[in-house]
Image 1: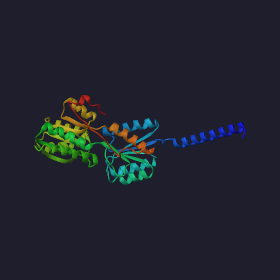
Image 2 (image 1 turned 45 degrees about the vertical axis):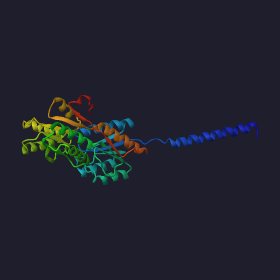
Image 3 (image 1 turned 45 degrees about the horizontal axis):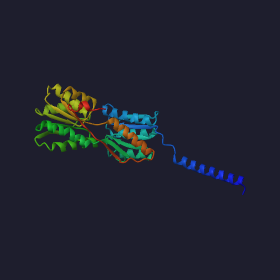
Image 4 (image 1 turned 180 degrees about the horizontal axis):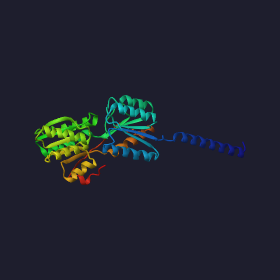
Length: 315
């Protein structure tokens, strides 16, 4: 074989190797998925908590794709309505659904429909059946912190508890609260079964009932800040100002109430903006074939009081 022929053959071999290498690289570096649409169904967009959660999800989605469409709706804690919303997200071609479940178990059928359509479903705020992953506050710990504050502050006497819709987050907060109160046997719980519907009006109505029924109680635990705001309004209307209210959320309204020296003295914080952004990031990772380190992701709460409010970053 001549030197020219050998040189030509060598160059052809190099070219073939390069072509094969580039082809393999191209196959390995397949383009990532595109995030076009995120559907979000939460309890109520009248609740600042869920507004902040949607904001966090929107910011995270727009970092991935500035043109991503966000479809955010309120379920009003109605299972049938939320199930229909999930079907609407399927029809709209959603890539990810963030779901604050109205009924964590019963919504599982609708979640399965979405996943069968190739949609990643992430539970937020509360756990839900059949989802890909969950992002929420450590609600049991939040309940412990809020009610530990009541126990340490009051030590004895009568208190009332306002509950809420029986979703996992509320059940866990009540569980944590009871765990803390068990350490203060001199505190007597007069009522713990009245549902304030995680709303200001609901908290006000429940508090009016408690103030009418019970002439003497010194403490109140509410499962979220809107109920705490409503409870304080009711107490002021009936000229009862010697009551300590402890709650959960760390919302701007509760923080302002603490700073003003009102009856709301403590709130165990949530971080809804982080919750929304984490849920989108985890969801997009799953779209792209990346499994999260864990399917249950808990965000640690902190207790906000007059002593700590200056350091609290808030929502």
